[in-house]
Amino acid sequence: MFETILVPLDGSEPARQVIPYVIEMARSFGSEVVLLGVCELDKIDDMQAYKRYLENEAERLRKQLKGTGGVRVVEVVGGAAEQILDCARKYSVNLIMLSSHGCSGIAPWALGSTAQRVLQKTAIPLMIIRARETLPKTGRARLFRRILAPLDGSERGEAVLPYVTELARKLKSELILMQVAEPGRYVHSIRGLEYVPFKDRDTDEMKARAQRYLDGVGSTVAGTGVAVRSEVRSGDCAREIIKFAGEMDCCLIAMASHGHSGVYAWVYGSVTCKVLEASKQPLLVVKPAQ
Image (tube, rainbow, N blue to C red):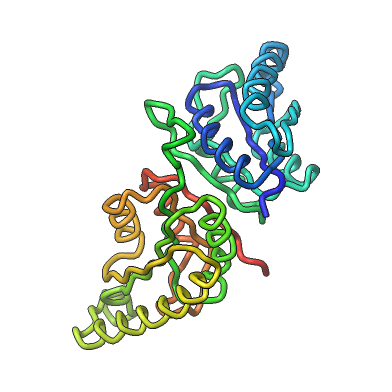
C-alpha cells in the first residue's frame, strides 16, 4: 500500500522531525523512501550545500532501513509545492510525508503553506507531522500506537478505512473509530442564518444510530485482526475530534478530505482543515476517489 514514500526536506530541523515517522513507516511496509530537495530559483547558490545535506540524510536513513526498498535522493529547482506534486507523479508515490513547519534551513520553505497547497491538489494520501521542540525517537516508542479515524457515515468518509486498517495491522496499533453528533444545525430564517439546537430525544437517537454504524464498521475491521473500538460524542465536530485525540493520547488522526450525505453530512473539507490547523497530532488525509 505504501511502496514508495516521498519526503520533502528543506534543510531545517523542524522539517527533519518527519524522519522518525518515515523510518517506522518504511520499516513496516518495506517502502522505498524518496528524499526530495527543492531549491527555489532565488536560492540556487545554495544548491551544493543542499545536495550535501540531502546525501547525509540519505546515508543516515540507509543505515536504519536495511532490508527495505532503499533510499533515493532527488534534487530539483522550482516552486516547492509544484515540484512535490510533480515528483509524486513521476515516481509513482503512494504517500507524501512532511512536517507542518520548516524555517531557517538551507532552502527554507514555508512548509505550513506548502502542505496546504499540496493537500488541495494531490490525490495521494498526505501525512503531516507536527514540528515540535524535541525530535521523537523511533523503536520502542511506537509512534503510531493509537490511531483515531473520525467518520461521518458516508462512503466518501470511509475512503480512509483501508489505509487505517492496514496501518493498524502492520504497525500493531489500536484503532479508534469516532463519530460526532452535531447538537443542532444552521437554518435560514427571516432573521438570517440561525443555529437551532436539536431536542434531547433527537440527539439521543442520532448518537444511538451512530453507535450502530460504528459497530458495523468496527466488526468488519476487527475481522482483519486489528484491535478496534468506537467512540460517539456530541458537539462541534472538529473541536470534539481534537479534544478526544488529546484525551486518549492518539498518535495519528486519519480523515478523508471530503464527506457528503453521511449520517451527519460533515463538510469534511472544512472539518479536516480545522483539525489540520488546530490539532497537535500528526494527521493523515486521504482524498476519496471521484
